[in-house]
Image 1 (cartoon, rainbow, N blue to C red):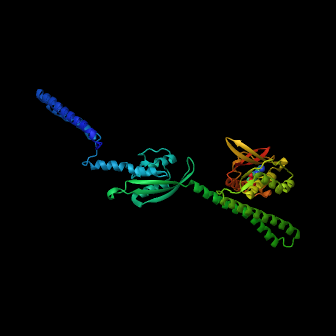
Image 2: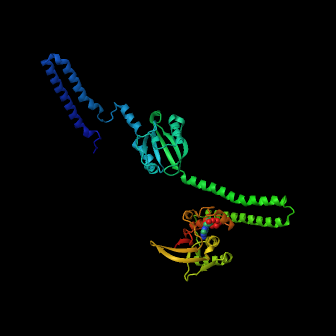
Length: 426
Ligand code: ADP
């Protein structure tokens, strides 16, 4: 059984319309002829009236939509070049990045749903410059339309949020060797790579700065000892002590940088061995007992009866809690005590082990808390240097915890102290 073509159901309608048109014209002609016979002086007016009637009856047929016939190739071509065909749109729609189709006049002719998600809704038929203002992007599109061939361009949008895009622009070949009418604009979001790149550049700049400071100080003392203080025995002893301290600071920094890079390399690899958090905290108390004493603080630790075993790297966990206890000794010693706790908790159906280090020192104001684990971030740079800090301790803690699928939760109140809790899933 053959299906009727889309134009078939319209045939009777068209015949009826033709018959009505002929009848209207005949009736009009008869009416105007009658008027002309009865009043010969009105004949020109009647003839004019008839022409007007004929024009009114026939004219709507010319603009009425009709099927594209082989006799009307011009109209057919116009329809194809104004709007991309369904196949083309389907290909653009399947793309997993934002993609637009423009015409030669830089008007938007199609956009896929990914582009709506990235750029919001854009009306078809609007000039592209209504939504995209970056001059480098518009210039690149214009050049491709003028025939420069496919091009790529990068640009950064500042609003609503900063986003960096890399864009490919290519003409879509037209059939029968005609000049391309459509141009594909394909966007790739490079914001994440850009951010990582910036973090890396900042990191290198910060690390060099941290190393250069003690190095410059050592060079200064060496020059003084070689020159003006050459024969000054007392100055020599004093300067050598300072230089020793600066060298120690540099090696602490290098140790921390190496720890950080080692842990970052295996950040996505989960530890396979088992570790007992209770044993870890016990060992940290023993290692840092002397430092606590030196800072006049009491380390309080009541080991629970049960074991707290997780998938974890024992040495890395020692480093996490050593850094936290060391910080509590350095920055929170004024409270006189540091409390270590281990607890099994249940929240929203999930079960955790919480291992906390609490101090009763000056506390940290709220605006600093979210940034504490950034590399080289310090609340007070001079206080950190004075306490032999590198600004990398909490960054190392965070990276080790990420590898253990654990979170660092910091709560702090000015004047009351801070609690750093590592929350492990069990
Ligand atoms: P640092 O080597 O400087 O100690 P960290 O990354 O370990 O670097 O800590 C970053 C900063 O966080 C410290 O410089 C300090 O200002 C602040 N900080 C860390 N722990 C505490 C704490 N227990 N009490 C108050 N401030 C703290």
